[in-house]
Picture 1 (cartoon, rainbow, N blue to C red):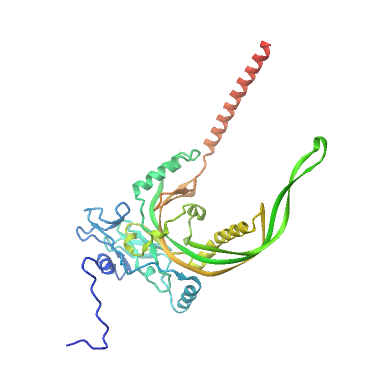
Picture 2 (picture 1 turned 45 degrees about the vertical axis):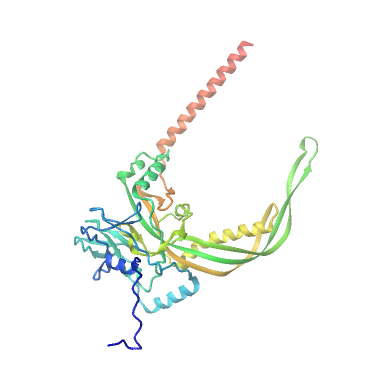
Length: 401
C-alpha cells in the first residue's frame, strides 16, 4: 500500500561510513528503567566500560575492548538567553515536580548491591563491584536545565597522581601525615557543573581623574619633596565583551581554589553524551544559571571597573557612579572535569584540586606547628652564629690596631 500523503516522510538513513551517533549511544547504554539509571556494559566480556582519558574513548578494564565515542555532527552547543530561559523554567517548576535530589538509593543491576546517590551526584560507582552507574532522571528532567556540553577529561590518573605528588612534596611546612595522602586520602575524578556566560555590556560612569605633581616644602634640613594629586571630573561610556566566564555551580568546594584552576579551554567542549562520564563521578548543579550568575557578577563588575579606569586615565581614578546595561546575556551548562583529593587531618577536611584538562593544581594544606617552630629555631641559630662570627672578626680587627 502506498504511504498516505499526510504521513510524515520517513527518516533518511545516515550516509554510508557515517554512523548514527544517537543510535550508537542508545545501543551501547544499558538502561535500567525501574532504577532510572544507565550503565555501559562491554559486549565482549560483560564488564563495564570506563571513559579513558589517555585514549579519549571507552575502554573495558577486563578485556581491553575499545569503543570510540561518536558525536552526532548535527548537534552543537547552544547559548541560552538567561532571562527568558529562567522565566520558562520557573513556569515549568510551578506546574511540575522535579526529580528528588535528596539521597536516592538504587539497586546495582550488575551485582544487586545497593548504591546511594547523595544530593546532586548523578554519576557514581557501585561500592561493591565498581560498576559505573548514571542517573537518567536528573539529566532528562524538564524541571532541570539540560547539560549543553562536556569538556572531556584529558589528564589520566597516572598523570594526575604525578602532578599531585609534586604539589604535595613542595608544601614544605605541611605535616608529614598530610604527605601520606596515598593511604589517608580519597582521590577521585569528578565532572562538576559550571555555567559559562557571554555578555555584551555598556556602562555609563561618573568619576574623577587624579594627576600627580610634586612640590618642595620646608626649608633647611626640613626641606623635602611631596607628591600631591589634582582631581578632575570625568564621565563617559565604555563597552565590554565577555566570553565564557566560567562559574562553578556546585557547593562544598573552595570557590577561590576552583577559580584559580582557570583558564578552562571551554572552546573544546563537545555536545553532551553520558559516555564521557562512564567510570567517573558527576554532579548536577546546586545553583541554577540565575543564582550562579550572581556569583560570577563580581568578576564581571571588576573587569568593567578596569575598563572605566583605563578610560578615565591619569595617575589615579575614582569611580563615583556607574550604570551597566546588558545588551546580551547568555549561558551554557557545561560539565568540566577535576581530580579531587580530600584528606582529613586533625579533624578537618582539606581539598586539593587538579584541572582535568590542563593539569593545574590548587589546594588547601594544613601547617605543621612543629616544622615551623623547628625552622624558626634553626633560623635563630644561624643568625646567632653569623653575629658571633661578625663580633669575633670585628674584635680581632680592633685588637690588631
